[in-house]
Image 1 (cartoon, rainbow, N blue to C red):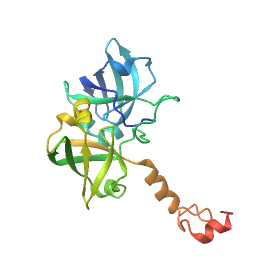
Image 2: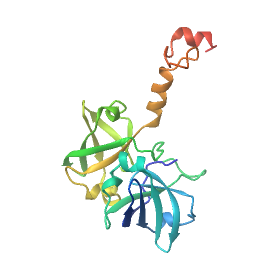
Image 3: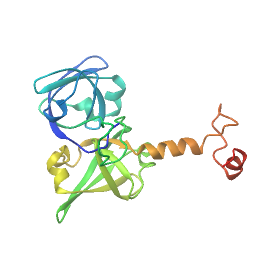
Image 4: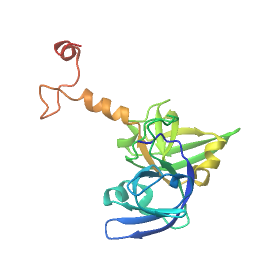
Length: 217
């Protein structure tokens, strides 16, 4: 699990693509501290498993599913990426629950400055937008952000100078593709609201007052 609080910006050293997968090599410093092969590191919000590492770099395998759902399909050498190690048991929970399992991508449609903050307007498909709620949380390229406003096919976030300078958002331009992970709590609530213990085979019935009383709530 991650929190969406980026630890550092790394640099893609290389990406070797196969027919349906890839191997990515990333230059880093801070996230390598205490890291061993098998550990998880979020790269632009994507949970990847470290397969090997050396002084100032690590490698990870990228599955077909990950390439299909994320911006890593367009990754190139010498580009910056956000990096975060998996949360330690005694670590601070500074952002929100981020699994590193990207739901899809969005496109930056507008960037505008508002005094010391910068507003990003991001368009996304319906399967992502249905979980975006005003004042809720969303992870963009692995960064935990608060949704400021929502429309049918886009939403706005306001970003402080520290986040711009410390993450790849400061390098983003209009038209860039970004990884999006919805707040997992909303997805679980939707699943439970459509689940009935009396008919698990079709997941119909949902949570009703009668059902809660029946099962002792």
